[in-house]
Length: 179
Image 1 (tube, rainbow, N blue to C red):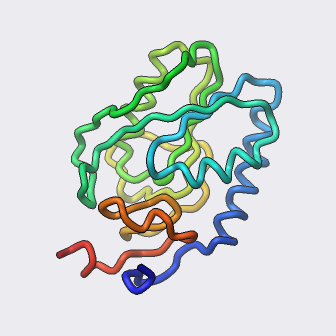
Image 2 (image 1 turned 90 degrees about the vertical axis):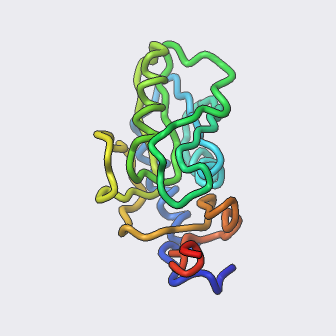
């Protein structure tokens, strides 16, 4: 798998340092609040696991499985909810945990849906942000790292469901996904 990468963008240590910094900030911002973390499957699982260990406030978690890629390398713009939340988020402070914010199409749909459920507050934390790919008007309050417009895999991020298990994040060689 490593041979399919052009370069490593974030090492394991880089990622853990980002989780520590974000966890500290989120802890400060959510002291005394009813925090409910929503992980977006499947990509956010590793990030969410490492991040919530560093948030020092009581919290609940749940997951949504949402897709707009359908196996390709770019969002189709069509958002499908494959798994919705299993519990109510009414009157809770909701934090969406995402692996990467690119076009924003998927997150815009998710935030509109969750906001309609009468939440107290709604924010986004993303490990990676590609602001130059944005098509929807949406920003994350908490951003781990802004990255260039390259196809990245590892640490939960995939190409055709592969590479998620890499413990770091790297750029995938174009010849791998341009076949």
